[in-house]
Every structure is written in C-alpha cells, then in structure tokens.
Amino acid sequence: MDRSGERGGGKLNLLLTLIVVGFLVFAGIKIVPVYVNNYELQDSMETEARFAVSNRKTPVQIREDVWKKVVELGVPAKQDNLKVTYGQDGTIQLTLDYTVGINLLVYQWNKDFHIRADNRSI
Image (cartoon, rainbow, N blue to C red):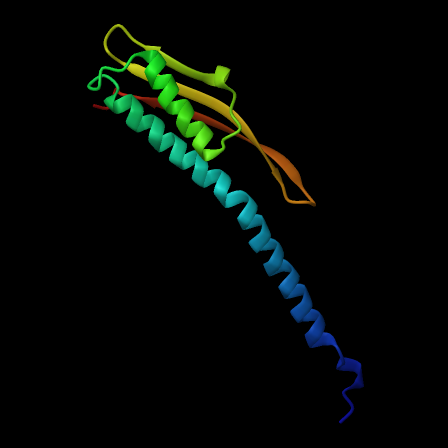
C-alpha cells in the first residue's frame, strides 16, 4: 500500500481549519464589544428617559448623566450628537448617533449606530 500521494493532506486541512477558527475568534473579539457597548448605552438612555420626569431632572442633568455613560463605555460619540428634547406634554426624547470604526486587519468598515429613547411607553 503506497500512501506517498496522500502525505500532508490532513495537516493542510488542520492548518486551514485553525486559520479560519482563529480569524473568527479574532473577529468576534473586535466586533462583539462594539455591539455590547451599544446595547448597554441604549439601555442606560432608556432608563434615563423613563425616570427623568419622576426624578425631576433638567435636560442639562439628563445630558450630563448620559454623557457620563458614553465616556464610561468608551463610545466614540461626539457630544454635539447627543440630543435631549423635552416636550410640553411631559415627553422626553433622547437621541444619539455615532459611528464606530472596526478594523479586522484585512477588512475595515464603519458601523453606524442610531439610538433613540423616550418615556412615551410609561
């Protein structure tokens, strides 16, 4: 039985599999924290909007509290993009648009996030 023609085939498959799995892990390490931070920020903004009226917060105080969370999470947002709108009917709307650059070494892209939160669902 001559197996000289099959030499190295299994090793090549293993190497390719390890490269693909390694890249998927690397991509996950780069991408997942961006989405987790966005989720945490959105949750924080929704909580802030929901309880701002009962806590008697001014738009400036709301803005400061949300901005603290933005800084804490390291979200690359600009302070000018954070909008706090108080309606005459007691509604509060918070909006924040920002972009995160994701670098996977072989591919780079910008992910845009648009967060909206209000207290209308109360």
